Length: 278
Image (cartoon, one colour):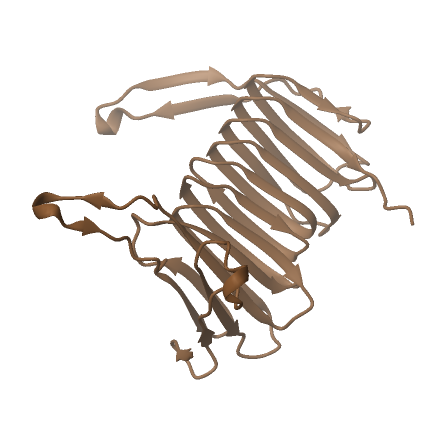
């Protein structure tokens, strides 16, 4: 069955993952297939209140979304002896508008895990809030990933990364970076582990309150001391606070765009990405 979303090009196909009855061992899966409008720059945004998402680059031209609902399979009994049967629908939706595809879940209380395949050269904006991890593999473009209560893992990527987690570690492997583009990796509670090509030119801005900085790069440490941080919340009845940040500044390969690494409780590891040897 095909469903027209916001445009004639945005077609959705819903089907169980396992077609054969004897193979239907996985939870019910809802599947959407959404084409981009044209061959121009492609963008995908996905937002989940509960659940995790995995984004994978592939050679196709459409976005393929598979969603599974996490739920308690037990049937409960309520007043009057009536049993409650949970609906399998995830509430997943996708909308295409001018080569920008938005993916989300209409019921914010539903926990849904989503697998999305995108054309390799697709820029991503990803947001998770609870009960899941953001995983990205094999894409080329800009990635803006934010996870409030979960980790972020990005591998085999080419492009620019902005990754933020409130409670979770960040692990990134970049096969190639875009020159002259800054990047940022920040978390409140968790380690930051980033691998970039050995010839990357960058200015490193590294901060950790409880942790260490480790790297196999030859970092040229800059002589300037810690920077002053001022927090002024007096206009809202709060406090005024002034302190020196615990940070380290340095250049690799002569310097370049600024790369920010910041964690409050965790370690920072910056590695040289080893070239694949065939």
